[in-house]
View 1 (cartoon, rainbow, N blue to C red):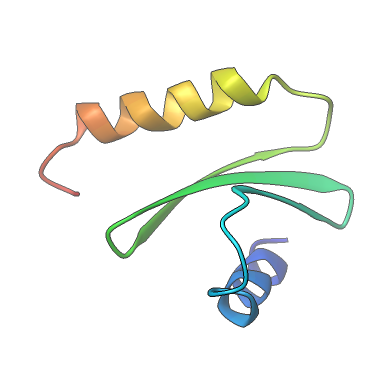
View 2 (view 1 turned 120 degrees about the vertical axis):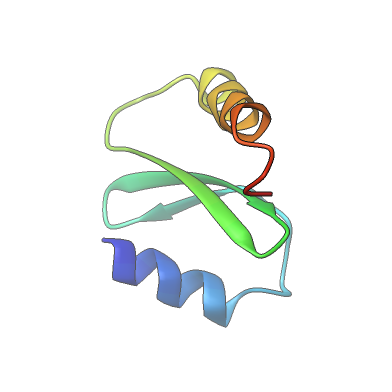
Length: 66
């Protein structure tokens, strides 16, 4: 699944800004910060707002990485 996401992102890098992709029955919710993608993967119906809040908190927790 990770390879499918990576391939999809590399092929469609400049085509849009939608931070959610459906690939192979999983939802990939991602945020690009500098050259790093933080990705949340879910296979069920998840709360997207909570997933993105988690990503933002990770960014704030590790400021040296970004």
